[in-house]
Image 1 (cartoon, rainbow, N blue to C red):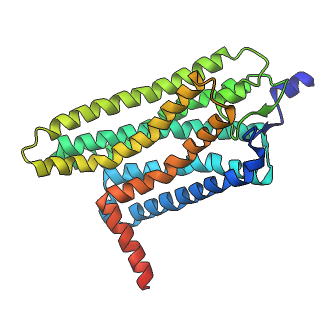
Image 2 (cartoon, rainbow, N blue to C red):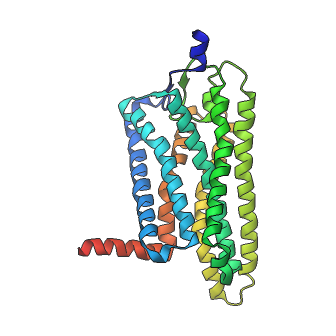
Length: 313
């Protein structure tokens, strides 16, 4: 019975942010505000893209996918964080922990793939403007979406089975605010080298390949832009990429910093690493709709029109 309970733990305890228990209530306030902004911003963006015919283009379809994934990412982690900080609800079932871990990593890999697809969209729009709609036809877009989902699912699903095979006979206290693969695996009393190898190598290599292809696509974009005859055409072409580049930096820069901090930042306090990890899953979903709302004129115009109509009604 003891061995069976090791392989089927009823629940885990999410410790929150150790050392900052006195400030949990105050720490939760900015996360609540950020989460609210993410819900409102991405929800408004999705609404505009659905109801406005002028936004029914490949670029905005990919943007709606990004907004949907951002909602999944923030909703997967922030509500549990707030219940932990404000209500002291630290317990999470083993099944709930696996589900949270899956959607956390799945959303991250999907986000990366969508950013690559958006880079492809900009490459086609700038390098082959006359063939843009024929190259990115609806059937092509559907195939791209299927590839993104299937690739992300097949990369992250093994994490679930790698955790389910482990015995958890010792402590079941996770020193974090959410479940992530390696953090949960480290609670096991058995060898977790396969988890470490797969948990770091496969997703990182997947995301690294996305970064490489994004960089290559922008090399071709810049080469095409600098071959344009007029300065105005160059500026217009580059401006269409501005919001995408900002979102890329918002997404990949904190991820790279987080990986380096966990790998080399042994002198960084554990609670600071946990805080940064939570800001990383909360802030990009809130900033992405703001970036596209500010830098994309079509969305900006529709956003202004939407609120102008509401005021006049």
